[in-house]
Image (cartoon, rainbow, N blue to C red):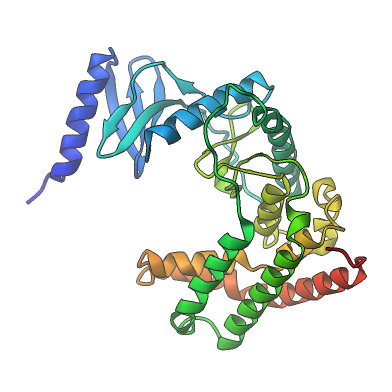
Length: 329
């Protein structure tokens, strides 16, 4: 039989009643992805996002409000002081619609990479103040980099026999070896990872969470993975994210001020060697049953195999860099 699933129909019926109760004249509702909708009214367009708990909704709403008060305007605003819409354990709120620029933000240009790093610096300056502000009393988890990577590495090892159907065994073994090497080094020098004062880190600095808006400015969006940690945590993730785009050029990596300042931090250098992207993407393919999708598999295969020789050279540079650092704990 045709028609929408009963659950979806029930959701939309309740949502329309909720919107009507607050005087919204709805023209159209588009589903963007799970728990994220675009609502078009006669006057404006809004994003309508669901959060897995009321606490998460309230935390992000308070954070984005305080960001503005501390001079960070490059993100969306939560709109309206009304009760969030609750459905099946999710709490939905209105978020400002930011009109995107015709040029999508990617890590494929130096200009974009530099803009992304500057934006993170601006964010950390603001959130360094917010963590000390008594008005922000929401509990935020402290980030544990080694625990996250240990879990990711173990999950990849457990599915490596599946990955071997697509990727040469030597590539898999090499990636696992790098993972253990990097994790041991970061653990050994963990004090250097957390020696700076904590701020609120974004936690997911993938390219799709940087949005170039119609004015040409770059904004940060999606605060679902915020945590308390030093800025180095965001910078380490950003570095790992851009490495494929710069073809694992350590010369370009160290040319950015934010990374150059971390060049002598052993935890950061070891962390650069963790092949997080390989582990993350294969784990996701298996966990979400996406191995039947040729497009998904090809994309992750390409990420893993193409440029692998450059990864090897980059890893050799990291080991040379570690050897030159003074012995420190």
